[in-house]
Image (cartoon, rainbow, N blue to C red):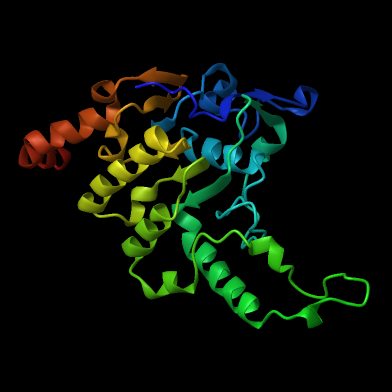
Length: 267
């Protein structure tokens, strides 16, 4: 499958090199240190690997580098619950092609409840907004409604189940967008993950979107045409689907789950 016309970001480069301490987090993570050596010029790029290998650090860094709220949402979101994101964003910059995305969004599984709460708040502000929010010189006296004019959801999200709200969010993505996803499978059933495979594939290969994703799901990993990077203590390398540790672990388990479990508890 061709990636022509689908990529806005070709790769990233390090900046402010004299301020980087390669012995401290996040630069001491092998995959982070080698991030600038890999191509991102694909409609879908997926990062996989064990816990602690840098998947979420990289995904968060890419989002923040592009000016997207580090806890999730779009560029129009500007809130934080706890300041936990790394300084990676301060030291990477995008190598772009001539195309520009029409919209962008960061779906971060661990903080989507906070994002949906912010959506509900902004809905309330939007509903009560009036011209009295300006002073005589045209300055805003309260929340600027233009800040959240780009809508990706609303207060209904809290009225849905966890999985329904996540899939609803994915369904709101539109053509010519740049979407960054951190473990979206966290709330999705296997059937919804399969539906997400079709949805994300259509966005990337038929609606000129670019998608970066970190996942532990062998279902989402199977999106046709996706570029897969496996992160480890040695760094980051491109791998084929059936050569990933993720696929091999699930395959070994599903072939004989009882034997697999028995080995775990064997003295």
